Image (cartoon, rainbow, N blue to C red):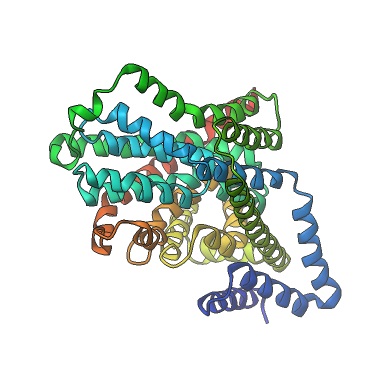
Length: 441
């Protein structure tokens, strides 16, 4: 049996297990171990799985994962994140669409605190969305705002998904996080521009808050500003030393976790329940990601041993005559297709053993490709009919938001994100400038 046939059989077996409802790490790890044992016997098969486990345990930057997850849960569970929305509510309510713009700002800051899109979705759907609907905002527009804004969680640092990509692609986490900063802020600015234009053309979509709600003493406004900017201060305390080279990435993650914990203590919100919930959630998500990374490393080791990447590259470039850019575009389209029934981590670990080495062989930068992958999965999350975020929003949104509203709300934002993806593809320096500047200095 040829190595190409073995590779196809591995992918087919893995997809069959996933479609049968098996856990992602279980399906990937099982196929990897069975293939290794069949190809290289007891000794070689066990060595591959064992070496993958040791590689994972020795990867020092993995310590950032529980630190940032804990930081995000502390800020969320202690309701410090809620203060952000109150700040945007008061300071931006005088603009048409101001609360929707503030919601995008809220999503960016939540992303910088947590690194998971589901956190932004939960806060946006339970805090921002009911307030926007109560103030007469168009329900389709604001439903799209919350979904699009929450997707920034996997691009703006500290993105947990980029930690996973860094492990699988063997790339520096710090560079990947910095590479996501400018594209993430650019995409947020494009969302805001869309809201401003829509509300300028049709002010009824985002009415101005009543004057009595906005006319509060300046001292109260400043107090809300200080409370709302506390998470920004926590993020700055964590990232400024890292960007300036004073601390390592792991040390910065520890600073972020400790600062968030101390902020909750000082504000009197670090109760036993908040601490226990934050620790439990951190442990659960960290373990889940470690199992996924371990399974992906084992699967990738088998693929490397088969030499399947070079065979597939020859198929595309020599036999089919496709140029590298066409292959890259087809890869991104496949992510969008998979995103209709898989989440971002599942998509990455399923195709990473094939795509990441192929991108390298084709001559593209793996840091830049990590940003492309992340933006593409953001689009896939929200692409009907089965986008992951669509059903997540349906579960969290108020009853008056129907599935038809959710589907209808997302098309303009998908188009904006597709434009952002095209811009980053055409101008790689948008992603590569900041990591190059920081690490070269």
